Image (cartoon, rainbow, N blue to C red; front, side):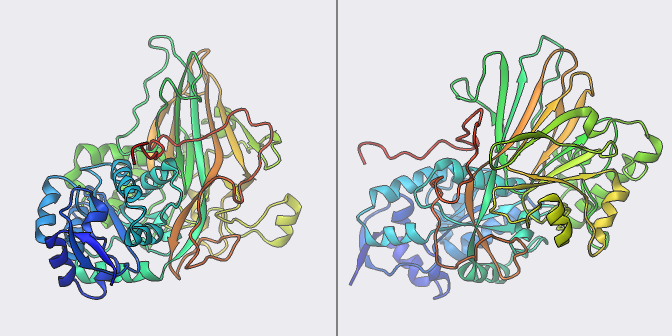
Length: 519
């Protein structure tokens, strides 16, 4: 009979679990080397999980969800740790400890247990569940990618934000979940049956010349924008005389001209999910930061978005400001195909918003790229929009009225291009600010006024594993599999890009996981 090492408390906790919950349970000695050693028979769990929850997401729902999952997977003593630390539990509060520290600690312990049969099985089958908004999910994705694990766990997403585009794209829904035990167990049942799907990672590098004092506003990135951080002085991407920032996204990046307010697009009016342009999203996040007590209900939050959009003039933009800045005036845009060939991207003068889209779910679940007919695909050399093809879809919008076409069965934005890389070179003096957004996280980007330059480049950078349900709307080039675990070693199906000016290695979300020499 196979034996493993667990504390007496762990034995009692395991015995008290239902047969269903035993499928997810990870013995405490696997999570921490400090557990008391006692021999106890055990079999490998069918679907071992680590759960990361943003307690500040969904109003009060995040905190309630933590307590529910801990009551299912941990004993009462562990629930008390919610107010102290995350060290010995399977369910982690992201506002207590960052996911990179948690995963570094657990994988280091798994390395110490590399001769333990049960620990090896858990490492092989491990899955991650993340509950929060799109920004929280992207944070976890960036961490898993940056750790460069030999066998990275796939990720399932619980919709706990306002838009919930990432969960919706993979079939997990877009409504905030119930926080009771029955709802949690229902979600876990889906995790067992979920299939794995690779999706593309998109690296963002932003560089600006070090400004003269007072000539360029400082960047106020929101604290929630965890995956987009200042590059360190030792970073190879840094250049002397420049400030360098880097990050990544998995769903979309959007850019809006700052002199006029208009939408990226409008989502379902029936469910009140208003499509948020980057400027309105920035205003919404600013208000929520100042008054979090007023943003505890998903439906109310969506209504606030719609109210802000109307106040800022999305629908009247083209009528009230016919000569306002457009994307073509704001920046020169270049795209690169898989062969490494750079070309200028022609953007019509009417386009005031650009969305670089990886997944078919944006602003509440709508697809701005749509489905081009075969003739248009052939005439423009377009391919079907897969989430793992190394290409990003670039879509433009004129104003909010343009976004309304997405409510029609075959509605779509202006299809500009598909590319492996895209570069925005912002022109000096074109505008004081632009509003940008990555996976739901907005910021106001100051632009050059004199001789400074701002360059933002998006490039394909490997892939990550997601868990999908039978309702998944994302499409893969390859049939998804419930059994195959993909290793993101950067060699399989990696698009080859010739003549790259730089070699991107990290998103800045975590340090690479390295095994100490004494382990």
